[in-house]
Length: 509
Ligand code: AMP
Ligand code: MG
Image (cartoon, rainbow, N blue to C red; front, side, top):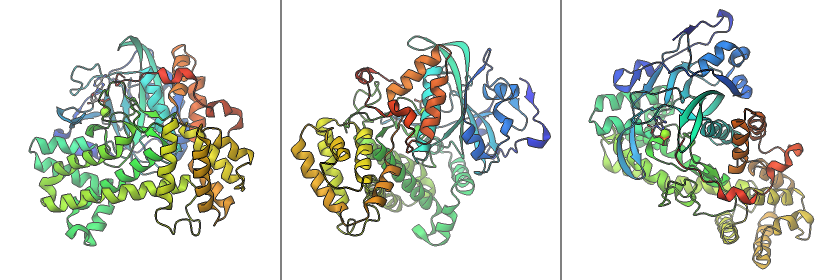
């Protein structure tokens, strides 16, 4: 495996802190090179945000590095070990079966870990081939950036490379590698791994590592006396808070993750491991996006409860460190108020009621309006994204007259016009106390015009399979600013075509 030597003037500074934890946490290994690697897409916006060398994605060396065919100087490649609960059952040891971490690099956003997903087998691959197919890699590449564009915490994607190497799934596909970037890819499952094995020293090393390098607020909060100064209880608290916020954002934007196993839950509250995810088309709270999830464990409306269940698994794993079962339970209980509060906040933003004098005074206004609206939308499976955008435009018109064409266009989405009129009246009453211009602005900044609907990803994937990546580029640019109008891309904001509902996405990737 060749080592790449970047020019001195613009080299990356590596801090491989995870690699210092010791052999219990990972296996050092190199990626397995793919034949004839090629570029699919670059995320130049992320490169700029990170402040990494501007030529970093355009050199032949970069192609070799990001396809796992060469190792950049300073990198210390490794695959980490974790365990987890899958579909509610203890699955035992899992681990990075196809993601290889190169190490952590200094950036304008702080040190960032770089992972190559699909870079070849590892000791944790079990029966898998260590590869990721082009189809699922395009989905992960685009969706992680789409989530970031929506303001939802997520791992990021720097670039996407491909190879003609055949990969065998339900059919023969080809290989790709997503270069993922995040401050850390540590999962709930990493903690579960050491707890289950009774390796309490390693459990503590991992918790201390996460606190020190990624969640330093735990130290300050514990020092200020929170949870009797029990720093591991504060760690659990911080993870609960971040997870509550992330889940509220998922629900608000209509995102279904699809595989909320504990090994897919980030300790930093980042959306992680994009598989059979889906943004809702028609609003159906019971929607199951993962074709393999026959019981609907991970249906849209169950996601917050599953997150709570997963946090219990994390609390259980941290119990040797917290050493106070009542305290752990008390921390977990906070999710029951934090999540609804975060959701109310997100829905108030979607409804434009944040900051409106009077509207938030009646504590149940937002919740009542949201619940009655969602019930109505569910009854008719009204398109989630189109509806919220039309509502935003109606309010931004600064008129509350329901005969206004923009109000009519929201109304047109409902068959039960009487029910809609009743809801619209209650909503108009809540709005009329305030500044409609500012409410409209808030709504247009919180109700995206563009989300990565399944059929949009599918069209980009079909084209990419013919060697044309232009749709991937278009979607990347569009989804990085999903609240902007982009009038030239109106078609991407339309209702999904009839064939969209027949797309079946499974765990196979
Ligand atoms: P996921 O359902 O993608 O979160 O994966 C669950 C576990 O299976 C993780 O440990 C993955 O690393 C591993 N895995 C998934 N696909 C593959 C593959 N093709 N080769 C090796 N390991 C895999
Ligand atoms: Mg996973």
